[in-house]
Image (cartoon, rainbow, N blue to C red; front, side, top):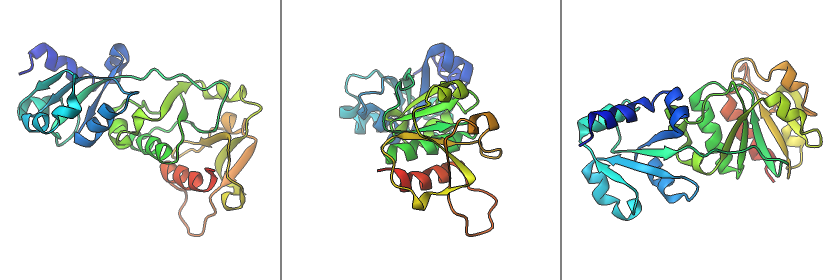
Length: 244
C-alpha cells in the first residue's frame, strides 16, 4: 500500500515542472516497462504494479525496487485513461548533443504534438537513428503521451534540447536537409551516410531562420490533393529513402 505522500509524489510527475525538478519520468504498461527494464541505458528506479504483473515478471524485475499496489492506487497514479497493470518511475537520461555529428540524425523545429514526437522517436529507432536534436519549443520528450508513443524507443534514441538555430549554425560542414513542399525529389537521391534531416512544425513547417541554415531542400512528391503530410509520417517516408 502506498503512503499518501508517496502517492502524491508520483502524481506530481504528471506535470512537467516536477519532472524537471526531480529528473524522473513515468512509464506505463507491460510492454513499455519491460522494454525499459531490458535496456541498460534506462535506469528504472521503482515499479508500482498489480500483484498479477509482479508474479508474472519476477525475473524481469530482478533487484529493482517493486511495490505492489491495488487497482485503486494504480488508477490514482496512472496518466492513462485506462490504467495498465504497471507504472515505472524512471530516471531521465541527461543526453548531450553530438559534437561532431556522426551518421544521420534528426533535427526537429517546434514539433508540438506529443504523439507526433513520440512516433518520430519510434521511427528513428526503427531506422537506426541514435540522436534527435530538438528546438526548445518542441514538446517535452518525458511527457507521458510522448513516452507512451515511443513504445520503449525513448531508451534507445538520445533526445537533446537546445537553441536549434545556434546549434545548426555550428554544423556548417554537415549536409542539412530540410523537408519542405518544394525541393529535390527524395526518390532521386542516394542514401545518406551522414547529415541532419530537418523536420518542421506540424502546421507552420520549418521556421524561416532555421530553413535559411539548410543547404539542401528535399521533398516527398505529391500525387493527390492533401495540403500536407503529418510530421511523423513525413519523417518515416524520408528516412525509408535516405537511410543507407
